[in-house]
Length: 123
Image (cartoon, rainbow, N blue to C red; front, side, top):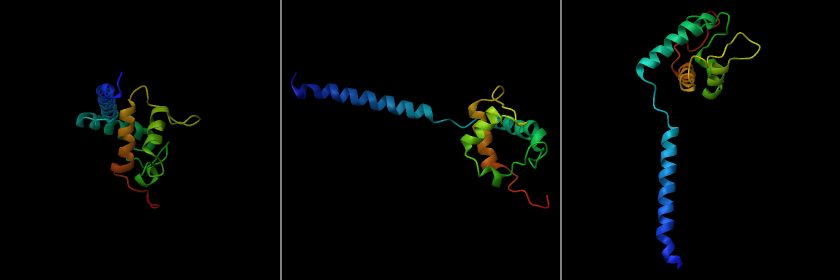
């Protein structure tokens, strides 16, 4: 086969690979959670997590969760803790009740949208 006859085959292969890569990239991008799911997760955070971390996340059985403390963790690390708990501690894993996407949303909320910015010593 003459090398110039292979050009259409090579071009076709490149087009197929490019399309597959674009589709794979789109699959990896997560769409934002629906507003009603975000509301449900806020309720879970402040009621269920709040039963240990305090209803305002100022601490209780579990430690306080202010934003400045959350800055020390990546969203991935927080998601892992939320899903799998901390062995040897009272922190349970929530993977039976929430998805990885839910845990990621909670982690991002704790890091960026948490109304408890810091714990003042007088608090």
